[in-house]
Structures are given as C-alpha cells and as structure tokens.
Length: 202
Image (cartoon, rainbow, N blue to C red; front, side, top):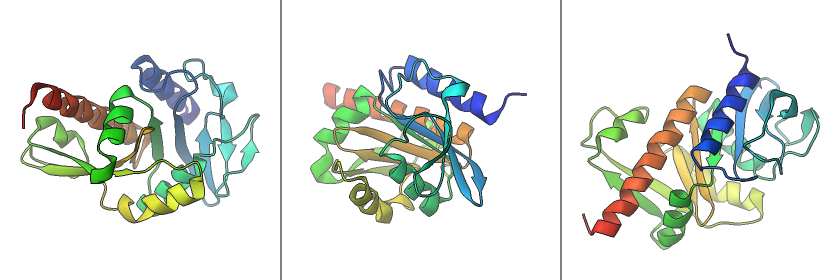
C-alpha cells in the first residue's frame, strides 16, 4: 500500500516523463485534509523529474507552507480556487507543448471545442462519443489572485479542465487518480485538435 505522498511523487514523475512538465514547469496538489484544508505539493522551483517524498510541502488555505522546506508556488492560489469551487481532491497543472500553443492560438475565442471522439468518455460524466466539450481559455496573468478570480465563473461548467493562454492546462478530479486521468484525456484531445488543424479536418 502506497502513501498519498508516494502516489503524488509517482504522478509528478510520470507527467514529467511524458514531457508535460519539463524542468521546473507545472505544479501539482493533493488534498490531504479538508478541515483545516491542507494541500500536499511539490515546492516551487524544483525539477519535476527529481521530486521525492521528502521534498513535498504542506500548504494551508492561505497558500502558506505549514510543513516542509521550500516555497509554495504562486499558482497555489489557482489550486485553492479550484478546490473551493469544484470540491476537487487533486489539481494537476501541466505545461505541455499542445496545451501551451493551442491555448495561445485560441485565446480570443475563449475556448476550444472538441467533439465526436471516443476518448471523451474518459471524462467524468461523459457516457458517449456523441458529446461536445468546450475547454475554456483565460488570458495569462502574473497576478494570481486576479487570474483565479477570472477562472472562478468558468470552473463549474468546465470539463474538469481549463487552459491558461500560452501557459498550460489545469485539470482536476475528486481523487488524484481521477485528476491524472483527466489530464491524460484532455492532453490526448488537445493533440488530436492540432492534428485536425494540421490536416485541415473539421
């Protein structure tokens, strides 16, 4: 039986190996306690390919480190907003090439629409490929309080994910396992989307 910390480290390592959080990119959180709210996270600025259990920090609902060494990412505020609005148990933020480029390209449209793919059924609540999802996109902002406020009205209707233009994907789920599945599904769909554009397929 693995611990929550071991599961989070394994997830971060796997996402790094897929090329979705190269270098120090990305941040990942797991809710370990609801009251008071506590998130388990990797500290800011660490190579995501080298995260160990001993490096993890615990962060409270004010984005302050309450256990461990290192700083919490400024983007912890977005994690806390998603947990608050969606009741999520885990939030995973990746910096894949697909998510970064497509979110920049489609920012003015405000979302990317994807439909008709069997893999949509990997998203909680989707039971048929005859489904359309609109993955929202918000403009990037170095003010994370403002960024989180911009995201807030979009979160409940989002398909367990949201893009920040030129930055990457936030995906979430009730558990770490579900959040990881949602990352994998949304990243797969984003790759299909740019290949559709490349081939000129509607």
